[in-house]
Amino acid sequence: MTAQVEATIRALEEDRYTAMNSGNIDAFVALAHPDLAYTHSNAVTDTLDSYREKLRSGYYVYHRIDHPIERILVSGDTAVVVGEMRADITAGGTRKTLANKALAVWVREDDRWLLLAYQPTVLPEPN
Image (tube, rainbow, N blue to C red; front, side, top):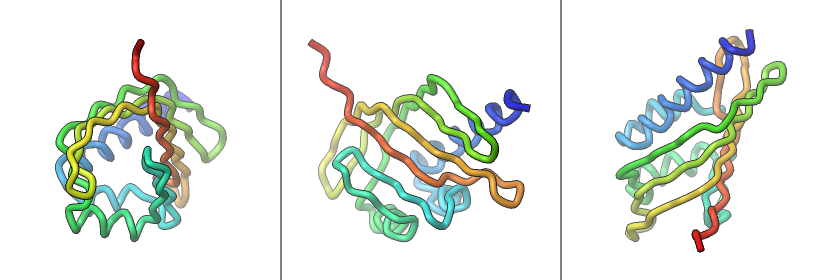
């Protein structure tokens, strides 16, 4: 059962990042929990509504995203994805390269897995 949940979450993570990278806001929203807490590497936390509006307005534009997954932890109706998010984005008109450790929390409600929270941490620069 856990292997099946892990495969599902892995596929949902791929769908989420594909939606972000392609600008498919509706596809992203369909994967998100209504109470989403989406934190950015600058420590700003968006709700689903505020993040959707930033995507629609072009405040965030994703040019490339790599998201290797280290592991997926499953406990009941909660799955935690531990990995990285490396991306080239435009945020507020400024082009940026991101290198983050990332934690994503998915919850199962009504037989659907939804993204409840996302939290990146900036990786230290290599010496």
